[in-house]
Length: 254
Ligand SMILES: NC(=O)c1ccc[n+]([C@@H]2O[C@H](COP(=O)([O-])OP(=O)(O)OC[C@H]3O[C@@H](n4cnc5c(N)ncnc54)[C@H](OP(=O)(O)O)[C@@H]3O)[C@@H](O)[C@H]2O)c1
Image (cartoon, rainbow, N blue to C red; front, side, top):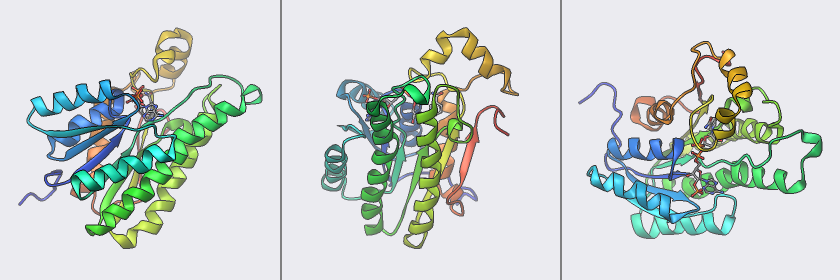
């Protein structure tokens, strides 16, 4: 027996936003460590490509399209998990949206609604539905992917920053309520990571340099560098951690 156990063999996991970026890296890592992974995002094409990659590496994955801002989609996702897998041990709330870049004072109601729907309403209802399934098998583990913008608001990303701060509090509120049911709830808080989502930061050299100037490690991160922290929090290695938030940002917010 290992003294520290990162294995996820026999576990069933849902990863949202699993078709690319951080979610894809998380899905590949969970499969590599033995989990059967349900891949969720809006578009089936990207999910199928990740599922094929996992299968080619000898793992097991099931792609299910789901818009994380739509409650009916989320309910359908967890019904499918129950019917097709019969259990759930892990949820990674990774899908996120940041549709509006600009001053809070000019933001439309639609920007508020979309950001809140995907970044908060989705993880809230997904966590509740997941927890119901986890309780049937005696426990489980949830990780939310927040952002350093939830610790310090980023310029022109006010609404997004508000939702990520609330996601950090959601992590702690669920951790408190679900601990007696054997369900741990934690968060990973990434800094700048190279993905399609953060593409605008990379295209605008002024913004990119502004950020990297404030990063002690003087670089951005890669999705795999976030996946390691997610694996740790989900695995038995973190069996005494709940309500915890791991910041992976090159030291930017320390
Ligand atoms: N990249 C960064 O610098 C950074 C920093 C801090 C935090 N984060 C957080 O990390 C998470 C992942 O972002 P990323 O950078 O990996 O982005 P990404 O590479 O653009 O991937 C986003 C993923 O989310 C899915 N998605 C988007 N909207 C969705 C919706 N409404 N319902 C379901 N799935 C949806 C996308 O697939 P579909 O298009 O198929 O839906 C895709 O799989 C987000 O929560 C983001 O806030 C990122």
